[in-house]
Length: 64
Image (cartoon, rainbow, N blue to C red):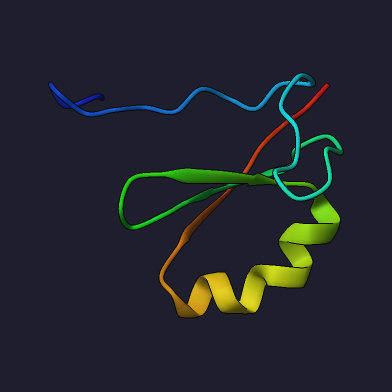
């Protein structure tokens, strides 16, 4: 159930690219401010500990 006014983020697709290197995005990092960053698997793993420390919501995506 979606609450009125709740924003939902679209699923990642094959067109979504990593903000660090341009590879296919596998993870969406939703920042506490509401912004987001997309990461490939490599960069998501490389920065995972720091993102969790900063309470950044990590959402794994399905890409084709």
